[in-house]
Amino acid sequence: MKTKYFAQNLKYLRKRRKVSQDELAQTLGVKRTSISGYENGSSEPPLLTLLKISDHFKIGTDRLLREDLTIWQELRLQEEEKSFGLDLEGKKIRILATTVRDDNEENIELVPEKAKAGYSTGFADPEYIKVLSSFRMPFLSKHKKYRSFQVSGDSMPPVAEGSWVTGEYLQNWKFIKDGEPYIIVTKDDGVVFKVVYNKIETRGTLLLCSTNTFYEPYEVKISDVLEVWKFANYISSELPEPNLPKDTLTNTVYELQREISEIKSKMKND
Image (tube, one colour):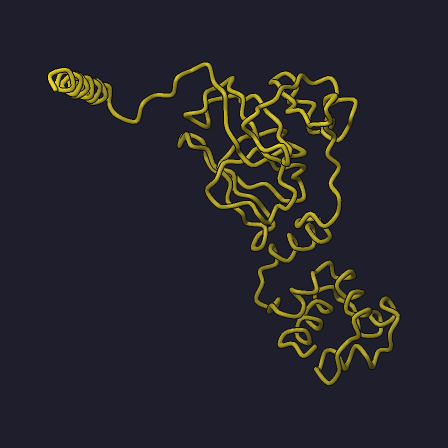
């Protein structure tokens, strides 16, 4: 287990906590000479001791072994400590309450605007989920879990206020792709629909952006995130504004109609 940074990282983290080698040794249940050896690089800890060190300092073993923590800013270290132990890769089972129909296929539950306020506390409660209305979309995969949330506000055009955004449940948050839309459920902000940038590795956060440039981007700590749903589609009663200017669009339609008329006329003459 020869590593480049472990010795200096251990010494740095110990001094950052302002504890002596004796104190750390007592906490970990090892000899002081062992801590001294780890720090000067003359010996390496067994796996069990390495895990104890990781748990004690709330720094992942991969960070301890492969990254130079001495150049990290204090804020980044604090964020790493706060997010330590979070199941970012979905290795632990996240509680997801859901409903099924008689044929044992899962429903797509609807979370209307009036229910969104309570969703961040009731999302894992089967009784809360059971009272939500539900429907199905036959063109979506039967092997994935979906849920629809009603959009509020004007921050995500062309998705208008009142539209229903359907998301696919994302178990592994490290699969969040930069620049793509997601439904994020947080402890404080509830349900939000945003374009997301994944900053989990570097800052322990998600950067949430709106397609309406009036709204400033903001970050949420990954420790505050409850659920992530990857955008699948949306349903709206409003027709999105065309990308082309209205005059250009009108001329384009007229031109297409003219060409179709000419083709039909030619086919008749032939």
